[in-house]
Length: 150
Image (tube, rainbow, N blue to C red; front, side, top):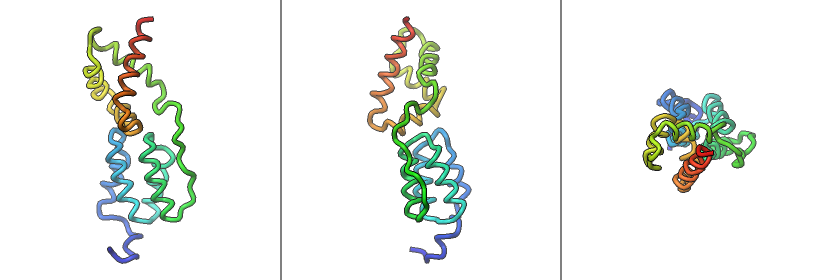
């Protein structure tokens, strides 16, 4: 391990990590950035980690940033896992995408179109739902079918 002093400097790839921490359509890149930034205690990294705790849409990223800040000795409130709706109006967005497809489209076709049109939404919910993502997305798609027929 490097000496303790170097921990307070900026990492050589700081600009890359800063970009990764801001990558809205890639929660895994944001999480990896948190892991690396969490090894460098300085104002810039603390600012980025604090922003991710308070405003990242994926709880896994928020929690990782929170744990890094706590390890630095920072006083920060724990992120809340209870968010009613990760993306405002997601059901309307899903319905709009569903209606843009042929009537007899499959769930897989819908999933691909969502990923192409709204990778941000796809990414946020994939990161948040984890193993339950497909189950959640299929139910949301089915619910949109029922809503669209009314």
